[in-house]
Image (cartoon, rainbow, N blue to C red; front, side, top):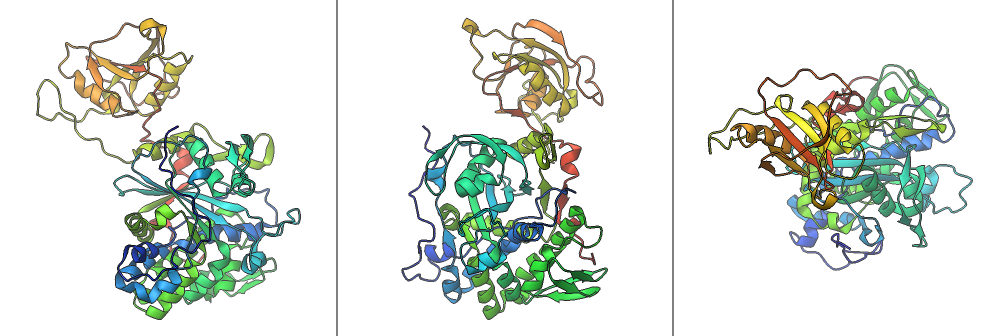
Length: 548
């Protein structure tokens, strides 16, 4: 069994800072950070959702945003004098879960993926007051989540995306340890948020990894009971309404125009349903505007230069956050997240909801739209969306760079070197969707009749420019194969027709590349996301600061 960076188990809630901490020390630096920013409402717009419990659910999932800007502020606090904020930092809780993840984990690609979960645990007086009313749960310490978000920073940290997973998604939950009894629970189909209620954050991480193939490096749990205190610590948040509000469900009364919301009114506002057209889409937009204001105020110079206000804000935010020790102790990673948090106000981060549709078995649940969801996951794993390929160099010239060979200029014959029936067509469809000119299918018989272990690319030895075409094809395949001169023998060759007509064909005389699919084949890099993903994606710059 591979050792996936296991660390000693640390019990949740343990005091990691009992000993005196010196300013500027490693302990001081690691204490100077908190949660990264969760994005907007992750629940899909569904007409079937009724009033019962809706307010608490909306409030809870939005409150995952309370950590927006907190990391930026805490890092700034550490750099300007940790001793002032030492007591506040001590409220940050840590929990190790590595030993509770019992499924194989995806490889670490160098990206930073942080799972953000909004926890509505009802343990404690604050949470009990604002938690959901669930009479069927006798245990007052039970917990749920309506917010499951993956913060993704690319390996070079120049791209950021926040992916929201609808809480009502029906998915295959892998085997997990029960968080309380530590007994193994078998794999089963259920709502994605049940992974959290039954197996805690470890099971939630494992579920996301199993479903997406994306390695989750760290986690942050946000306790929504602290949201009110955070808004109050910021001195309130100003909003602007096109029309007044008089909502009985939230007991919220606001006039048209501008209003300064304290923490109590902010809770009512972010869970407001009966306003405007009453749709989830409109409410999500209101929430995004509100939370963008939280980010702006939490990272403003007015807050950063006021020691008292900054200390109060950090104390309120720190008391609402739990994270894994690896993240809490890694100052560099925390600074990366801090910089990403600050970019939220500059439009540098994309917010995406998993493409979904109604569950055929239950109209009150949703399922992920395929293959669209997997294409989104593949783009995250390989960080290829909006990427620009580097020019390739021809073997015939040695060092002189050639013009970039585009996918639509590459002819490909896809051969199945595995025992999986239909594998060649599956891969061909992926290549065609990315613009490659797939001209045929076939099989390849490896020595001894065994499956080919590793994917290969072959081209004709006699064509000097062939390596350039092979390089473009290799760059699109995960894992990346090494092209080799000399073609292989094809059995059962067949023509290929793309499911969707392509924009054009490669020029005459273009060499044909052979892609021989092996058992190690993972995916074709996604550079063109489907419309369902693009339509559910917004950037921070699109969150207009206007009356709603």
